[in-house]
Image 1 (tube, rainbow, N blue to C red):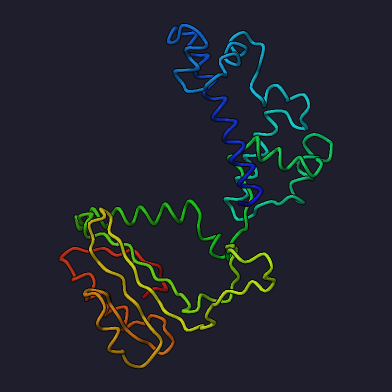
Image 2: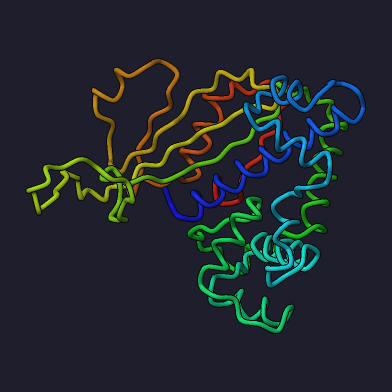
Length: 284
């Protein structure tokens, strides 16, 4: 498990534990539980009823409050940093260890040490670290409130105008896969003999492309099965023997084209009287 995931899990464990303790304290105060020990048993906190008693008498505080004087950032500053970090992640401009440190220094005037990041992630499990996927800036700029709001307004107008039921609202997409799985390395780990230094795993290097067509409807009642587009000139007999209803076709490069898309549209959706299909522009 990645280090960031371990820290997040630990942080969530601490938060859940303290939330239960606070629930028990509130229960004793409002009379739901007669004593801290009864509250601990009722909420399955175990032998930590002494902790509930200490919280009840203000002798112990939540972890983030108790250690706030030792932290670089106070609670308000840290929550601001978390919100800013999450917002940058949502906008496709995430920060990393090297770029978040100057922001911390700007808030408190001190450089965070290497361990600060780990403690920050543990205190704030709603913020984590991971490998990003690339996103073209042009696609990112097109995804804004005005564009998205206009799309759904037009969609709702169309639905209302033609009185299209949810069972006839379809979302269509396509994805290309390589039969050999591509050349991108996997982070999965496997078992080997300790004396085996080679650690080989058989894997096809076939880069032939297959396009998968898939669709779902708004109420989940659709029985439309997937379609597959292979690279080739003609169909093989063994393909036809597959399950009925699955659409199979070929093109020179394994991509969809106007002819294949039209054929799938007519065969898979059976063309009900009122129909709406949501798809990306490159699908057809």
